[in-house]
Image 1 (cartoon, rainbow, N blue to C red):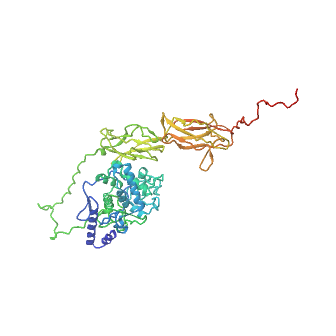
Image 2: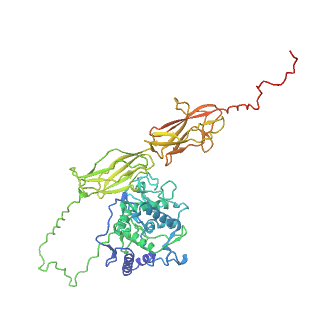
Length: 601
């Protein structure tokens, strides 16, 4: 259909006008809240939703997207009936792996954030608009795209200006950021929004499972309920801040809700029009269906300016129209002075000059625990006065799995009457080390305020053996009894505590021994220090089997944990004792009662 309209656009002016009106009608018929004016231009209601998400924190950096609208005919019949060949347009088909990723992401979000009510069809709509469903489903068995999908560099030339944030790791560009992957995340957003959707231990924006789950969490932040139309629109606009983008996504959402079906990977149809294509007469500005002509891309969310209108024909009398019915002026008139624009009352956000820390300064928690202190920020004017009713965004930055309560790395909070916004509680993950939480004012460019936080290892203050069995072994043999210990902290079970086990030379010399008992690694090589072992949910840890070399003696196995717990276990290597003779089989020591056979005295 896009090619059909493009051919029409190259015809005469009358035909172009008809085509423009037709496209506008098509758009209006499928995009909620869209209308068309008499010239075929799309218009939106005065109360159209907007987004205050800056480009560098949006999912895509407001990068380009596909503008093709769904077919007029809905998928028919429903996906559970009919043969695959009869299930409507090929546009309704979604590649199998891509569809599976969307549905798994929906299932995970239903579990993690049931109040969000994320429909997988929304992910499908965004995936269609962002990458044509991963370029028609060109993904491998694990869901990773065959070749990277890279958007234009965000260098400010028709797009947002976002300097490189990932050293080119994801987008191959070490100067500017580019949107990456099937859901077109920019690296700066992926840094906090990325998720591992396929369980391979890493978050990859080029993997459709990871990208779909990340998109789901991104759309469900701020406690949005996507069953509410207003929240749904806010979420979509935060992904890419353009009214035309909103209406295009909503159109595909409604189309997929009416039915779709699975098709083989790599066979999906590819959209044609891009939001940065040149357009003429389509009535959609820079967001319309492209004609294929090359053009400098337009800033997302703006329309291509129309040429100056042609001069009007003079009146039939040939005389200029008299602007003043009371009589023309014969003297040069002084150009009227434009009235001064009305002075607008600044909003609270407009008055914010800076952010100040309003609470604790040091934030630390043990892995898996909730931070005891919450981060709080005060918005102030230049004079230091508090500003209430200002939205402050808190973002977790850095290489960490710490999140706010609920699993999010972004939270928006409104300042109270004293100008203070308190972030949700931070929850430490299992990854130790430092990270940053940055507070910024939503809707105003002022320097952010950074808070440093640290996650430390889980600790224990006591280690005990669960049995008292003596541990012995013969030279060259193996210890029959396993060693199991229990870790506690202040008498309470200490789970997930790292335990280091070292066979030391003596109580006074903690250096690793070079003889005596040993563990084996995966290759069967002798090792006398074990690391990376952690206690289970009950605080228990069973060590691997111990072996002995040919050196006899008494040895010490020392166990230690973060927090100061230590336990020394004695190991003995000795030859087996000689068995005690059985008295019944040994020489008799009882005096004989036999009569003497010697000569009589």
